[in-house]
Image (cartoon, rainbow, N blue to C red; front, side, top):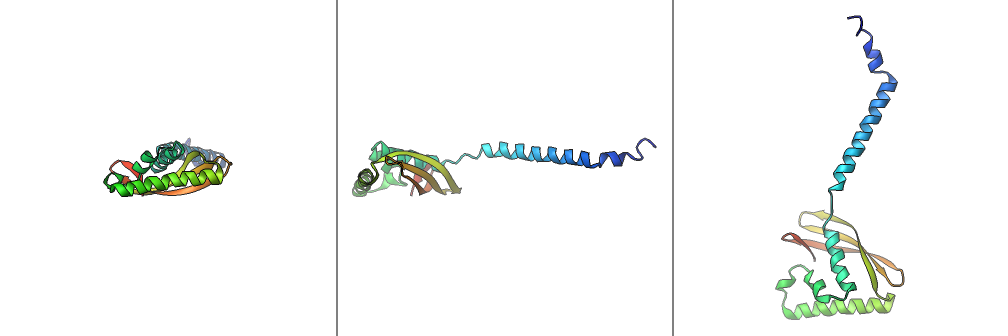
Length: 143
């Protein structure tokens, strides 16, 4: 019994407590690092894909990325194609054209999201764009 009588002094010493605190902090950092790796955002990647279609001048694919485009009347689809063409033409005149699109982040809540992308133009200007998105089935589409 005398062996354990003063053992609390060693167990609760400041060195041991600091060591336990440091180990606890390391476990928390490792846990958070592992859990954040699985938080992939999908809406921003979808927006990046659709805007890449503009760079490649695939206007039909861009318009297909608009929510419920499959049920749009033909005249409205044609108007959307013309809007996409005129946007690319205007940006060519203004900045020399679109060079790249990069997904930055998205804020997703249920079936709606705001995707944030960065567009780089030929004259090195970068523009951050927020793209409202909606989930149609399992696919994110632009609103």
